[in-house]
Image (cartoon, rainbow over all chains, first blue to last red; front, side, top):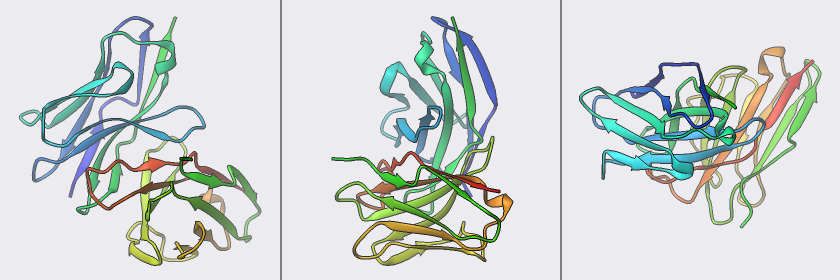
Length: 113
Length: 115
């Protein structure tokens, strides 16, 4: 069965510094993987998705993630954090051969001035 | 094209009452998914429906919970005889097809509080 593990429940950075949110996956085959963002009291928005076409995936708002099969990782990065990036981020893997999504526990990103 | 619409946004129920949560998918989407988010946790899959059919209900509690997606109208998640442990945010997502690479669009959720 597919699963994802987010290694940090909370990450705190200063505005303008790099962001790294870590995600490891468990799968018997090369999965597709997503990152979603949830702003307070809002729905979820897709940031980016990996579908085996290219290992480095660029998403919205300057985020990107790299699929590393040897490390079973799909970490989310951004070169320079902005105050508006403060939110909860979820690493997600689809399951069941369709759009049934398995969510990680989430990483809450705080951005300080 | 309006997004996924969920209502109500907030719902307060006393223990033992029924809760009905509604979800109108995006126009042209016939696949609906319900997820539950308990405090400080990620979202957990509950049920997947395609117009008039339940495709996968493996995440639904065996009792008190039911879901439907009629030919006309919104999808409904129904919780009978609510208990305190049902307090959570319930999210609905929709997609135009069942492909695992197809983006699912989420509503803003219904926050259920059981008192």
